[in-house]
Amino acid sequence: MITMDDIVREGNPILRKVAEPVELPLTDEDKQTLVDMLEFIKNSQDPEIAEKYGLRPGVGLAAPQIGISKRLFAIHATDENGNLYSMGIANPKVVSHSVETNELENGEGCLSVDRDVPGLVPRRARLTITGVDHEGNDVRMRLRGYIAIVFQHELDHLDGIMFYDRIEGLEDPFKKPLPGFAL
Ligand SMILES: OCN(O)CCCc1ccccc1
Ligand code: NI
Image (cartoon, rainbow, N blue to C red):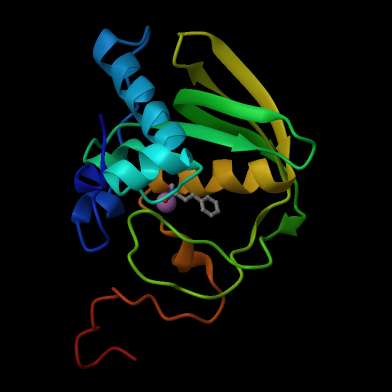
């Protein structure tokens, strides 16, 4: 089972890589990765299991966070209407999105970030994504509200983007100092 020891923390370059698409149909290995990530997220939300194994609760997990630079992530989250999204997705693609943005009023966090980084994280209010789920089925989902935000947090991980990169006016804490002559 995946535990916090398997979760890569900020500073590890894998979190800044653009992850590779996976071959289709899904290999058994990639299916297992999605199943393992989904199991971790469910475990992290179970008070007993989370307590027993010291898991930090999360609603999503992207493969780069467990050291696998592939376009795979898993989500186990309930939206404002009580709809549960519990799935693994391979090669997710945003096929359309709103101009309108939305953000969680308390900002975001990340299992790969062991510190609080306050600030609003602007995200698309609505988006349509396609992909392949952990059972190999094609999926197409129109997302809005909380679940749209969760999906975008995970999608960003596949492109090497961390939530704090999107906080207005926050200098990227890991930006390399520019050579002397640059402003
Ligand atoms: O990448 C997953 N992760 O680090 C766990 C937290 C996910 C998450 C947290 C706040 C808002 C959206 C998504
Ligand atoms: Ni994250």
